[in-house]
Amino acid sequence: MKALIFGANGQDGFYLSELLALQKIQVMGISRSGNFLHTDIADPTAINELIKINKPEFIFHLAANSTTRHDALFENHQTISTGTLNILEAVKNFSPDTKVFISGSALQFKNIGKPINETTAFEANDAYSVSRIHSVYAARYYRSIGIKTYVGYFFNHDSPLRTERHISQKIVAALKRISKGSEEKIILGDVKAGKEWGFAGDITKAVWALVNQDQIFEAVIGTGKAYTIEYWLKICFESKGLNWQDYFVQDKSYQSPYQVLVSDPSLMMSLGWAPDVSIEQLAQMMINQ
Image (cartoon, rainbow, N blue to C red):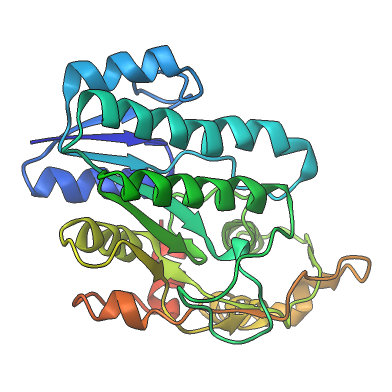
C-alpha cells in the first residue's frame, strides 16, 4: 500500500509518516522544504502526474502556512484551496479509489466560547479561514460525486517539532535559555486566553482512525480540554523550580481574538479514538527534547 503526504515536513507529517510506516505503508512525502519530493501543489499538471503514476491508497493534504496574516492570503489560497482542488480532480480522473484526507482548522468556525463540533457554523474571520472553508466545500462536492474525501478539523496541538513561531515552543525555548542563566523576559499578550494543548502524535492517530472507516467523513479532532497560556507557563517553569511571573512581561497592545477555543470531539471519540498525552506530559516532552 502507498500513501502520499503533502506537507510532510511539518509536525503532523512527521508523526503520520511514523504511524504509516508501522502499518507497512509506503510513504511518499511531498514538501516545499526538507528532504522530500519538491512538487508544487498548486500546479495541476504536476499533481496529475504524481497521482496518475502512483495511484496511492491514501492521500493526506496537510500543507499550509499556518498563519492568519492577511499577507499570506494568496499563498494559503494556492496551497490549501487550489491544492485541494488539484488533488481531488486528479484522484477523480486517475485514482478514484484513493481515500483523501483534507486538514481543516478550529479557526474556520464561529467561536462563541462554547465547545465546537461538526455542526458549528463556519465563519471567515481571517484570510486563513477563507481558504480552509473553501477546501471543505470542495471536499463535500467531490464526495457527492463518489470520491472518499475526509476532513479533520484540527484544534491546537504541539510537539517537540514546533518552531518558536508557536507560543508553546516560544515559552519552552525561552525557559531552556533562562534555566542556563539567561536574564531575558518572555513578552506575551493575554495569557488568560484558553486553548487546547494536544500532542501531534495523538492527533495523527485520529486522522488514521478517521480514514479507516466509511461512515463519518468530517470530524472535529481535539482533546476537548482547554488550558490558559498562563497554565502552560506555570507547569513549564515549575518543572525547573522557577516562578514564571519573574520572567514575564505583558504586551498590553495585543489582545487575543478569543477567550477560549475548545473542541467537542465526541464524534471522533465514537470511533474509538482518545488522546493519550496530557498537557503536563506534553510540556515535559518538549522541555526534555
